[in-house]
Length: 200
Image 1 (cartoon, rainbow, N blue to C red):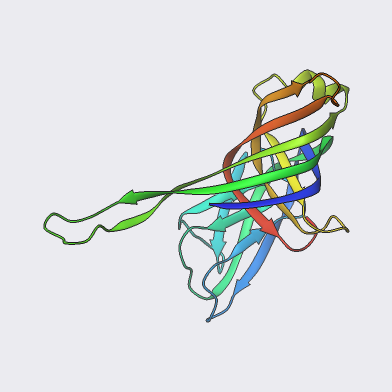
Image 2 (image 1 turned 120 degrees about the vertical axis):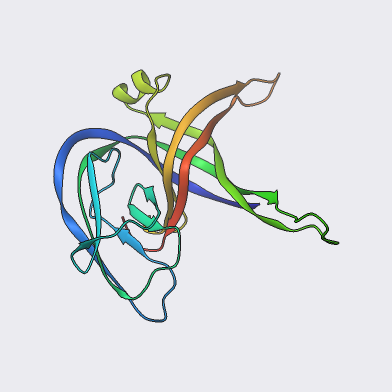
């Protein structure tokens, strides 16, 4: 389990579809993982083709709002990404947020072994925010089936951030006698959440 917190965050949702220029990244001989990033946030993928050296590449990957992350180690080479995307506009923000990342552990012990063996299972994340705002369109979508894109900023320049798809699964208001009214927004992750150390 991993937990992190911060002050500011942003919420995005799909607006219009457009073609985005293919992204490219070079994986060196000593590298083990590769993230192909794109110039815009991505809400829906209508087409996606991963290529290595111009040839279609089918190794497993995870889609994130900023591109894709390969699941397994890759061999050295130049990888490209062709796709169409939905550009996203900001519809809200969160304040005083907390993020919790979990990984299920699954047992895989063979019969007859003397010690239990485990492997990493599915990952998940959840977040909360003490305060939040949404514009008019956001308010009409908060109770819908929309999947939002969340950015949780960790620096004062709002460049470094955790980013992932998520769904708003509840908001709570607590009012105690002679106490300030407290609010809390609850967010459940939909897929991976990834940390970027540069603006995206």
